[in-house]
Length: 336
Image (cartoon, rainbow, N blue to C red; front, side, top):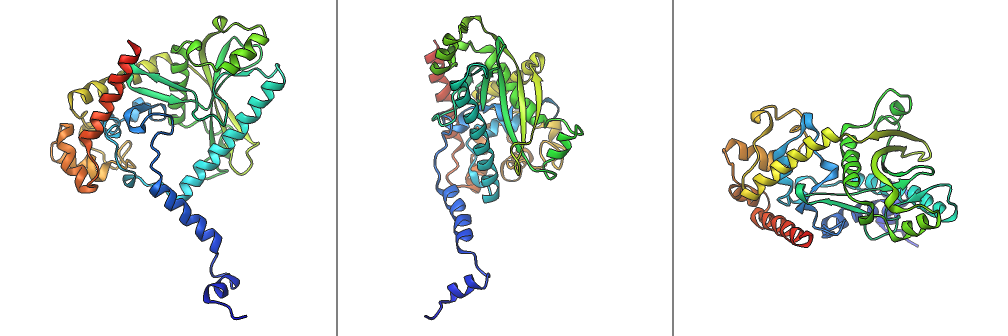
């Protein structure tokens, strides 16, 4: 039977059909995936634990612009990046899934207090005063402890992402990861257990004779780095609650929130200088919205509309702002 050109190319090794289809599938799904509610609320309507301001190199303006629903095309996720994220999520689910299942079988492994893998959403913490939300990987009550302990997992390559250096004790945790887990630790510390511990965990605690009301507030967490090639290789950094740093960071969020309500943009860090340095160097917002706005002296959110629509005609910054305000007005009514 005669071979088609494509079949010949496959047999000669010049074309890998399934690999090409999978690569294309990632791009298609990324382009058409309109689910912007991975944690139950529209993503752009809050600040997130993963972007808690790192005081030495934070940018108030980037926080405000993030609330304006910048289009994905400003910072598209490549198929490689998505697959790395998927691998990290899969490893996280496997680890916490095993731990969760084991705690259902034996009591000496403690209790997973938060939503287990497979739940529609991870356990969410929301701080209304700061417009801050965060969904934890997990909070566990280790055996013999009287307080929950946060755990956040991160995948690392051997050398490219410094896993081996961490394993040898030559490198500490990434500052942005420390800031993120500080957000989880402090949010859990300030939120009563009764508001977030799952029903399943309460039943296990009751069976163990542990009263929820007797638990002390969360004070610690573990940054757990795992080797992507060999996930059983892990490096753990235990982080203690930084109350003062949390207060400074949330003070920044409050200031950005207040300016946002008034319709004002926060000032540029460092007087608008150092565009090639952190925090501006790799910021996706710099080229098309942030730097042009600074150069034109724009200080109001409404003044960004021409720049936003020039980049993407569908980018409506005022509608995005209204969505943020509407969410938190609703949250305030619920809390009242």
